Image (cartoon, rainbow, N blue to C red):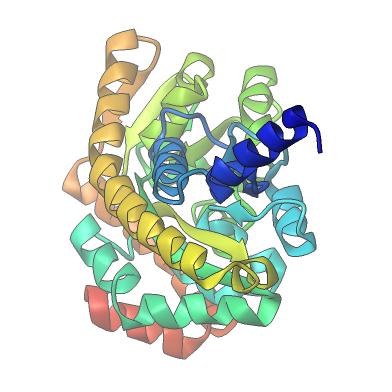
Length: 330
Ligand code: LMR
């Protein structure tokens, strides 16, 4: 053997095996901007996963619907074209997992503390388990926040909603919520909302401030009502076959990285939303409406219909379990 070959051979032996092995790639697709709570948490998970596996895992994050839009990303995960997602809990109905729409019930959570009783307790764990029937595993819940209502008309009284076309996520509960106040709901992918508002295809929508601000929706809406009438958050999903097929040591490291990314996500969510709302205010582009307790109570009373109408769909047991945790009273 020539000296050159011997040297190359020695070099290969000397290299750590991790440098030679092709990394396991996790494609993580999502629909929001990188500065949102979900965007930041996805990037943080990537950092931890790559550092802790010493490069054996590579996480490719695709934000802002770059790779897939709402509905497409769920299909892509089931087919294995992506390995990780964190869809909004309001988007599980079309998969046949209607129980998750419990999170969309208006006024069901008054605070993050109440929400965490569910997402960090036995009810949340039971719901995640149901994903396995669809070939998925739910690794964690990531917080976003409480929604404001935006429109080109001031929405203060229930009657103000009459005839307003409102974009919603693909949830029957949100459909009922909008109908309960006389609005006309329209399901639409997140990536299309800005343009739909700009061109008047819809009049308004609901979002946590972090989503509203990072998509510049405040530039195409005249009014924002600080209603906190509902919650929007996520479950981090992986394809079960992919996840269970990972080497056990890698899976363990990734589970640890996910635990820490979840703590991070839930720590930044409230502040990100507060900061986003402050930035919207500062922009001076929208008039901000604060509801009196009486006005807010009138929204709650009207929207309670969404609870009644969807008990059967979500499952009475699940709804009652969440009521028990949060103390919801109509
Ligand atoms: C929406 O479609 O409004 C949200 O689900 C987007 C997101 O992922 O926060």
